[in-house]
Amino acid sequence: MADYILAIDQGTTGTTALLVGRDLAVHGKQTVDFPQLYPRPGWVEHDPEEIWHSTRKAVRQLLESTGTAAGQIAAIGITNQRETTVLWERVSSRPVANAIVWQCRRSADICNELKTAGLEPAVRAKTGLVLDPYFSATKLTWLLREQPELQRQARDGRLAFGTIDSFLVWRLTGGKVHVTDVSNASRTLLMDLESLQWDADLLRTFSVPAPLLPEIKPSSTVYGKTAGLDFLPDGIPVAGMAGDQQAALFGQACFRPGESKCTYGTGAFLLENTGSRPVASRNGLLTTVAWQIDGQTSYAMEGSSFIAGAAVQWLRDGLGLVHTAAEIETLARQVPDSGGVVFVPALTGLGAPHWNSGARGLISGITRGTTAAHLARATLEGIALQIVDLCQAMADDKGEPLAVLKVDGGAAQNDLLMQLQADLLDKPVSRPQTVETTALGAAMLAGLAVGFWHGQAELAASWREERCFTPQADVEWRKELLGRWNAAVQRA
Image 1 (cartoon, helix red, strand yellow):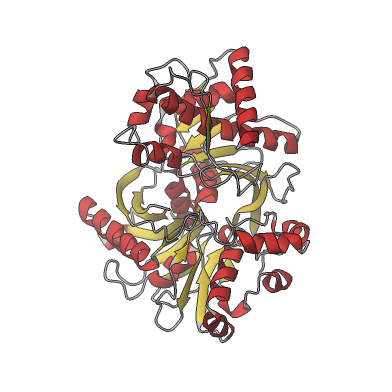
Image 2 (cartoon, one colour):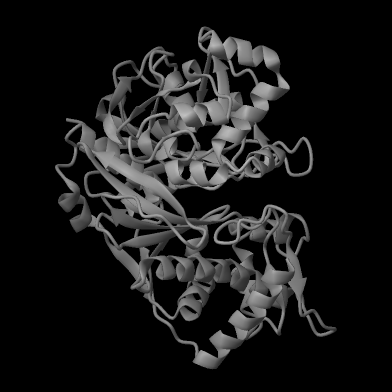
């Protein structure tokens, strides 16, 4: 009898493989990092072969370190960095270019062209997204424009496009299966939110040949089985898939409309389950597919901050203020407040609700008395204040405030950041026992598809809170800090 679901969490800086048991406990974890490529300012790439190598290595190390036999794995679930765009040859499975990462801004001019042509309202109505380099379609347009030979090969059906989920399933199944799930497809600017199919008008808008595209499938179903691998035997079902933020929403057991979570990783992503119909935002948020299970589709409203944990990495790698990201909390606790310093971490532009790709990071309020500790605390405040903006926009769209915010991701383990978040929102912040909720969501989706678990009610009953951060700050402190923040954002 199989004991585990193997979850593959393919992230922006590394790939994590986990074993998840029936009790939703993580029984083993291995992470393998891979290089980030920055060929020009504002450009971010990955070598797809490095992604695949990190996946193979993480799974192999996981099975070896836990002494797990392949027969103990019931299914594989995949979650992935969204929007990152890969193009590969169908016959050889070789990538024809580096992957263009979600953070990459190289297609900004293409977005501006389409906006100038007046196409954004129609695109937004169909996709729930805005015209921004963040999403996959303009990255793909850029690739095909830069290399006309690729456009010809694409029309002839010799190439395959996919986000990272599609690439991994292709490789795991020995090149037999070219699919994506509805949650990832909803992030491409090419899928109609209502029909859940690739849209012919959108393909024309972005000059994308239809033969490139994967088949869109539900988030919980058997896509295919492993074949021809050197680290797993043939025949293991690949059975669950969702983009990282939707997987985290599922892993947080936010199964009912109105339930929300925020994941603090490289960026920060707030999602709320809005139920069986897409809800359009009036405040710069995105409408996206959360998941589709057994023919039932759940939608979500989303706000994205491009820089969260990456701001701490900048303090570490760019300024050398700390040696490890974990040290940021200790440094920030050396002072009772930021001393009037405000840091707007718009290092790659501002995401929702502002959507200003030209915005840049800004630090204000520096005096002779400013120390590294003040800057560290202002960085944590800046991360939390971005989420306040997102929560306020979401509350305005819904007409009701947030009740409680579930949190996850690596930076959610920072107690000071979570307390600041509760204080600035004036709402409880709930952290689960398992903060690996992205991988957990992928495992849940795969397990449901193969009968490892028997419904969402069983999964919801197993979710456990580790700590709840309750608001402790006074109204005047919150009001003053929000005022300084809003003024700084305008200048950024």
